[in-house]
Length: 365
Image 1 (cartoon, one colour):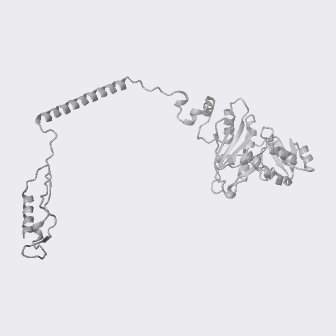
Image 2: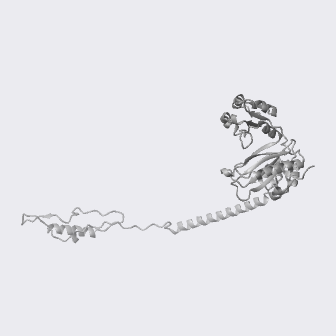
Image 3: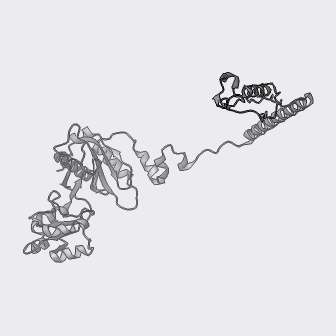
């Protein structure tokens, strides 16, 4: 009973102790956190547990009081001073903004208007800004997207050739084919009746009796294995290379040298044949090889601008007939997409496809 009375007295003293706002209360020396302990009595020598209820031995709650937050300006004088400073800063900002706006308006009124563009910089199309003055003048002779008939287009081609050298006449046909498919590839030759207007240097690879035949037919260079060794050494002073079939196994090793230059003999191009004399005469007279590029366009020269208009028309129609005759089997739908002719350094002239295919050159007596 003495232990329980001491514990209750300590608990009551802790609860009744006033709490200071900034210092934590201290625990009394007689306080014990455990409510159950041994007690002894003078009348009995045995030990027993105390039987007082647990609610009388609860641990006290040590809580600190929450102090009130101090105001920013606890005194009226400080609040008035802060308000005055804020008003002065606002007036200063407004004055600076007015000064900046006035300065900007003065600069805008004083700035001179931009200078108008002159010369090539004033041209609407970007590609025309890099053209020469000569080209810009001659392209005014024809309308950009107008389609012309064959005689008118050839006449414009001759007018636009204004350089100091003799330009070539070129035809460019855009076809509805995709050369990545085997049945839509186009590679052939055409004999231009009026020639190409340039001298063709022909080399022939053959052996045995064919060597004398090639020389008599007018070949510029004739040889066998000795000529192959010269080609491996970098000799390329010729325009066409013709080979007999028995020389092709030996020519195969020259593919990396001749292929990129377009000089590799090929049966489709007529440069691999047993009739060497006929092939030499055809290329000397004006036989031209053509093929479609990866975009489906055929580029084909058909003479020189110093040819007469009749000769250019005859060569052009021979090229058109050849492209139409060698139409690939895999071509579907509309075969001809567009056709243009031009000089080497001149603008292109668009052809009317229907009139071009139906055109028949006049018969000369």
